[in-house]
Image (cartoon, rainbow, N blue to C red; front, top):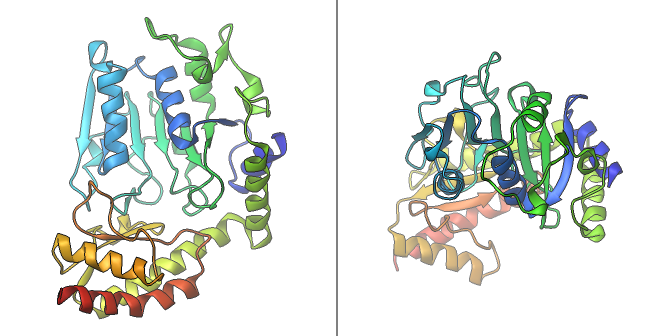
Amino acid sequence: MKHAIDETKRLLNIPEDYLVGIVPASDTGAYEMAMWNVLGARDVDICHWESFGKGWFGDAVSHLKLKDTVAVNEYTADYGHLPDLSQVNPKNDVLFTFNGTTSGVRVKAGCDFISDDREGLTLCDATSACFAMEMPWEKLDITTYSWQKVLGGEGAHGVLVLSPRAVERLESYVPENRPLPKIFRMTKKGKVDGGIFTGATINTPSMLAVEDYIDALTWADSIGGVPALIQRSVDNLKVIEDFVAENDWIDFLAVDPETRSSTSVCCTLKLDGAQIKKFASLLEENEIAYDIGGYRDAPPSIRIWCGSTVETSDVEKLMPYLTWAYETAKEA
């Protein structure tokens, strides 16, 4: 476990004074754990532009009931767009998703909307960004991800990355009237539970899953580390960008190229909803592409996973079949 944590920190180039821990329940568990421990000390800005970010807003308002004690500001946008992130207040805690998995829209590189002189904490859900996009750690106080997205590992375990500012919050703020279940508790006697961040997990993890994660990290290291992983994802996106440029019946859901995801690539087609379902089923029935339909809450669209474990040659092979499926579904 400690080896997995140490290798994570090394490969992701996480600052030495940040803590890295393995926690239960995938990215969801890690992010909820952070929310329930630190939110309520300050007003909160929640930025969302797709389904998972919207889910964090719902939890903050409906379950944590933050509006009972602090101001909660919601900054949102339709699928394909980013909200106006310049509205984010550096005095407030900020929740956001680095890469919108269901909309194909990511924050711009560098996260310039986050102030270097902020007083609040940033809570970043980076589950489909870590290992495929450059993470500006100096802007991120609490970051979470899971093993099964970019690295293609096993599910059920989450990773929690804490800055010194996040640790200070944990050790100075105790939410009133907020009982925490054992698997959410991050402090003991007013201090951060150091065991979580050295391999002594809250509950017993699957050691098979841990070994699989270490194997994924070893592979990543062998091909050139995170820079190579990022380039693989960028190369995959480039294949689709070239295809979109050559065909007028397909376009990116992300309006601004700077916010175009390189992992969860979402595209709209000149087909209605029923035809897009036919498009997706044709590809699945012929064992060409699986689960390519857009997320159920998204506009009618398709979604192509282009993360770092996907070979660019396979994305290239897929492109002619998109044309075939489009021509067939259009006549349906």
